Image (cartoon, rainbow, N blue to C red; front, side, top):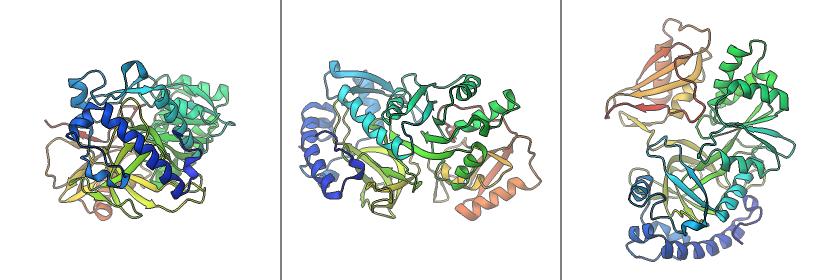
Length: 434
């Protein structure tokens, strides 16, 4: 069996037997068909035991970029014949050059099944009508995530991005009860409702469930509380993935807001120390960079691929919901980390401080116009609609960042509406130096 039935609820022993058999097939397949990994491994055979994978070198996005540039359009890590590919996606390019992603029919089916587990865990059911508001133009988050929503049996409305006024009318006319989007998108909707529908409030749309992914933010209790208060809907972290590996393999459940790893039958996870690449134990309390290996993938299999995401593992015991995957939080990205006087800071840490201030909209940027090292952290935060900056507010926020994060901050407050409306991913750290 390629997929393990109800793998998200499977016991440790049942999973390990399936994983061992899957890797025996996949390791042989990669060694035989992926020129990229044959070169990287210098002809060495992959280990028979998954526990010995750290003997292989790590792979990363920069290597894939070179591979696609030298061997367009899919790179020489494409292991299946081109005729086997039935779908082409492209990454969003938020962290560099956009990449072409090829999927076979089997890759699509596996992706949709595992993603469906995640959407179901987050509460989506056949009783929901869900509007999907991610970009359908080649991005994995559009069509592929649509199919994961559909795998739950829900009625899916493929709306995409743009035409926000039409979206508001559609939600009301169709009786839509759930929305799938990025965490920053409700703020865009709020602005449009306030400007174009003055007689409406966000609660009037009748949304009961928010399924979020693509950005950080849902780990912050203040942000969740605000979504509940303003929209009257239950916010759920429903869609965590790494585009080059798997579009969605982790989500929360109704009992626990932390992400549950739900792709154990098709993905092998590891943790490493980000700076040295040294292996770390995948144990409760451990923080490190997530590394992923496909146990099933036809077109572009990845082995020991560095995700760039820094996660903290909180629990490895089964959840109250019965799912057995480890539970974790994404604390930042290695490429979004800003080091200030030896402190490793991530945008999510800054957001947790800013979200405590009702005079702020929650939108912010960390503008870096010079290369490191940094003695202080520049933060530009946007005020809420109709609010002015009280005397001393910027300094108060800077002191809160110093107290909570240990870093000196230079806080600038800007009027509401300063930052452009963003329907896709919002890039918080902005490096403008060359």
